[in-house]
Image 1 (cartoon, rainbow, N blue to C red):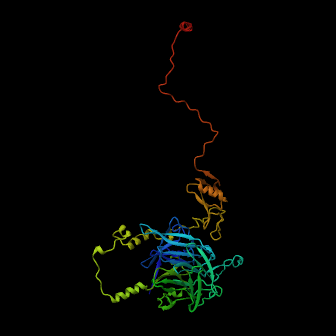
Image 2 (image 1 turned 45 degrees about the vertical axis):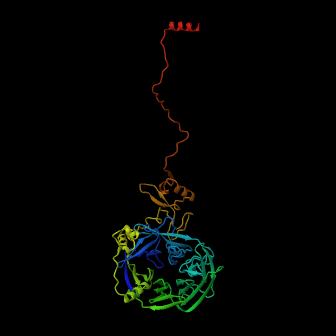
Length: 537
């Protein structure tokens, strides 16, 4: 067990309590950044790199057929291991947006591809839930259960705003515990069923949950009704029968008083380590506990905690997430620092994994083994190794860090540019109170470009008092628009049609080459008279 301090490289401003760390395709991903995503990383998901006691971030892109994924704080996250030919993925449900709106959507995050430069591209799809859909919430849990060859997912706990009929001006932003119902759904069709269990009487949030086969264990949690963290431990068993599922619950007395803790897996044999969290509002939990799941149930074993530094011991709050098997990233906000790069102290806590323990045991019993030099027995090179022959994969990744590394200094101030710019003197768009005005708006106000001058500028369509029909017409056609300060009328950019009553100009006829002229004979009057008498007679 080691405790390593980290230095964030121009990325400390993205960390906030409630962010999540995901692991896909061998990479650690940061999800739930502080604030709304900016232009340098519109997805709001970053790849986390640890190198030489430094933490660097790299922007992650989405595929073209992906949906929008808002930066959610305190969502329910469930990792799905590869099975039946399906790739590893993540389910993300609920959470709070930077505008303190609570989401009820379900997203599926998978790996789409890797480019020739080893850049990761993700795919995000929103899954529709039908039936007894759980209300919008955050601080809850999402786990997968498998029974009788079937797979289902369990949602439990969390917090939400008060019902609309009970909300007043004084308690508008007050939250309550969600009802202690268990929601069960399957991923293919999204059918949800709600179940009430007699053993679960009080709501709880920010608890720890782990699952094995058809059992889910809920550990600790905070109750906002009693403002306490009772030592809870529940085992929820889900049997996916042919008709309706059978759900049973059992309460144990060997629970833990903990909330907002970080749990990391140390191997594939259902072994976990719980780090951090709180015992009380003003007291952190400094102990580490190993959790083991087997056929008999759940087992807890105390582990020796690392030697915490004074910054960790004296800090009032901390947060973090799992940074891979046996690794935890902890962040401690530091108050009174002017420099944003020093707003957080970061530490990486490493525990011994099962593979490392097995290797240590083998090293103690085995002798030296001679390496084979027969190239015929060596495995073939991977595509990435053949493409970058002569360079190690980690050298290739490190070489691209300087070009693709996220840097907060590169971001533009969105108070001067972007969607929340003050477009005119009478601009009424406030990022804190804005609500969608047009049907095409979702999370940002609609804008239109004013072509006044060489560079032009962007203005809000709502501030320009544009109707939705006119806004769609201007966005579809090839037209220039002038805002109210510069005319307020669209200008046709294409060539105007020719008027119908316009007269066409006369054109001189073309000369015809080798045109035959009529034959003429010059005769005197006497000759003409003689010829006339000759032929008439």
